Image (tube, rainbow, N blue to C red; front, side, top):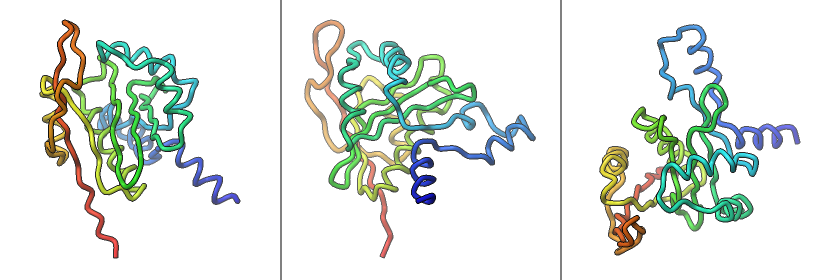
Length: 188
């Protein structure tokens, strides 16, 4: 019973005591992003998540969509907090049939281009491995060259294009590049 409790607790928060120790003992050994941590998203997080979402997209998700993801059991809903427990990013994934689909990943504007996107993607890949998934999928705008470069650096490959997938502010539509990451499972 106790073991089950602690395993459940571990699933709520990803915490590395060694990082905190090194940050306090050797303050220059880790950067700010290294000290950020992930935890499961809760309904109480939605105001902060929605604020980040509104800064990241011309056509943001509604609160109802986020609530649906929190209610359903086959989603991975994560937030990333800085050292002051401020939510600085979030990610929603769908998990089914050996696949993880990244549905929404957004980082607060003042936290971008500092390595947090890479850290979050590595977290998602690690969680996919824990779920015994074989692949991770996502869509990205062709105009988002920074994200494409990040995904390729992590081992994602383009597998197709979804025509007219994204709305644009001018009323036209933009394609989506479909990308996949294959998880190598070497278990016997």
